[in-house]
Picture 1: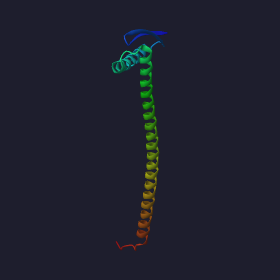
Picture 2: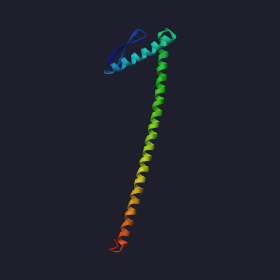
Picture 3: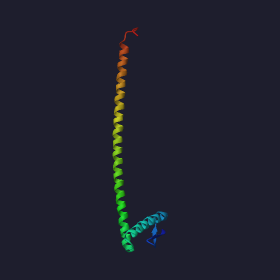
Picture 4: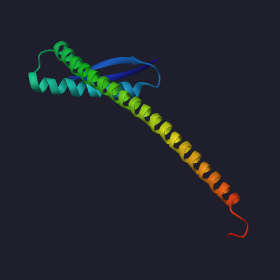
Length: 121
């Protein structure tokens, strides 16, 4: 099991993590410390517990917004996929109709040619 030391609000904390996750946990610690520092600048040093709670709420709100954005984007992608499938179907239908029209025209031309008297050309 890995261990990472992160600094938050000027204090060091030892955090355990899975092996190989040390860099990710250290980066999360830096982000949390940045959020705590920004809050401390706004509201002052009101105690680690309150600052940590406020930072957790700020980050949870950002996560909620990001989750909502992801859901919206996933719905838009699904709609685009459905529209693409409809367009592909319509394109296939048009191609089939055009093919049938060309085949019918070719058949009529062949019949006209067959009905022409020899030597009329």
